[in-house]
Length: 488
Image 1 (cartoon, one colour):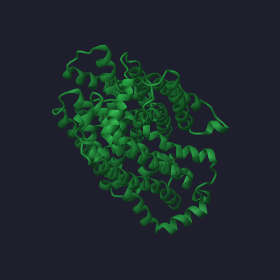
Image 2: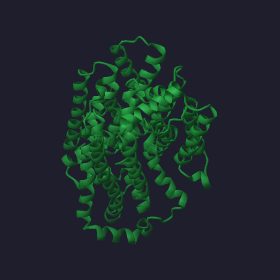
Image 3: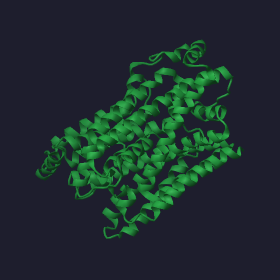
Image 4: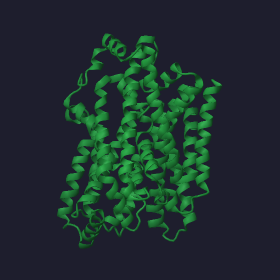
């Protein structure tokens, strides 16, 4: 085991844990623990949103897809970039204003409950169930990515690697809550972007330039140079449809809710989209250039999702490689910590506090939040024990689930005054069930990414059931008009 490589990892992990301990002593109530007291600046908001969004998928799944499929894999990047921009442009500011206006809602179920006058907590419970279901899968994808990293880097067996990665990620989330998560995500976002700039440039330098890369790919597999090669209309639509998922991801939406002032949202959008553009282009380049490097040098790569890991170890000295590989851990940690925290906040705020123990003290709620972080992590760890799990497949399932269940409802709740509580519940249920059922079917139209039909059917269900149930109440319409006035 390389001492420089191990030292780099340990240094990085100590910094993350140090941030967790720092914010442990600055967390006084549940709002601090789950939303940072709405005190984040635009830079931290933007990079923490981006880092928590991309996860290990950015350094493992996407390069692996580009390595295997070639340029046709870039359609997913186009869809994601467009979706992220529309989310920042149309959802971010209204959601911040709405949640603050509606009794300072600090979770997505809290927001839905206040927005649709959910006095009996039915909507709150359905929202919480959907979040816990899909976040368990999403968190598992991150733990699988972390295990693959430790397995490949330190020659550990998968089970041991999974335990180590899980322990590190859970520790600082448990301690520091939202502020720790956001500030570690900010640092991790910078590290991820730098790694995705340096690595493809090093590959190009080693091979001899972009023309040489194209020559090598042309000789060995010319289909990788065709952006539509071997892909049907359904395949391309499926990749583009990933962009729809942004409107329903709770760990991204809470970043919008936590910025200290809605007037800073434009700066945050500019920072976030710049970071995303550079990082995605770098990720695609790692997979594309990496294929040429592997072929040219006869590298034996058994798992395409480990292309970034292999390039880091082959092209750089152990000290630099250590920090580049830490970027993968950063990507994984930045998403899992957010998912654990959102899941914890839902169980604490929307189940324990709102339904089971309304008189709970702030200190009690914070500790219940920490306990639920541990519980969810253990369940996700158990799902992750299958060493054959694919990071991309687990992410795609959870991404579709959230996008279909929450995406249409988030948009309609912000821009329509006619939506009812019954319509909201119908949309979440239809979106979730469509994704789950569609995932089990294969062939023809069922090869379409389940997010797209789930999103469409959920939207229809919300609108139709809202009309059938008599339309929104007068108070609900008044709330909508009040917020629209604030947004003008």
